[in-house]
View 1 (tube, rainbow, N blue to C red):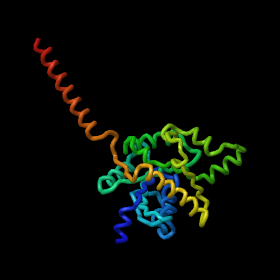
View 2: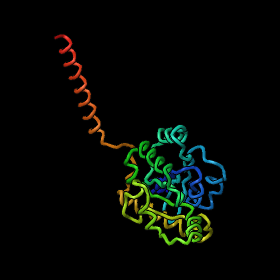
View 3: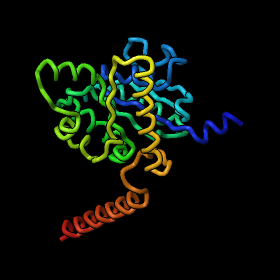
View 4: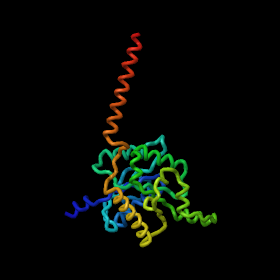
Length: 238
């Protein structure tokens, strides 16, 4: 009975991001200390890993993924393809991990690739998690800058600035441990639950348009192609 209740109320959370973004370390923190070395072992994640757990009163299925690669190496995409193909259920929430202060052109390409792979529908199910916030605070202090996090969000690429809501952004301090780390992870889990509620408990579906729209477009294109072939044959006979 307990396992059935778990499955019914489970929140599937998939972590995405570049290698070195702190993705696997975050997956470990979300899963909790009872999952030691399950996600984070200091090595690069090469395959999709997942673990179900109960955290802060919520049932979570945490899914870690290989880091994004450049366009000439689609290994992240191949492994995600295998996972999506073999999975009976899709994520409720995507956590895209971004090292704060490092939103370069490479990050723009990564986000474009995720939108291309999953479809633009992914953005409605995404929370952007800014990792290495501790290092960024140190850098700002050293440079004598007074940029706050809101100003930083305003300076970011188009995909990240789509949402005017604090619930779509989260900061993670990688140096926190114990109760302080648990507190920041609880805040993230609360944001996950808020987004699931906003989406009415729906899980992500990988498409950009309803099937009927795609079917109509396909039929229209087919008719257009046939018409072109017909008029071409007429003009050729004259």
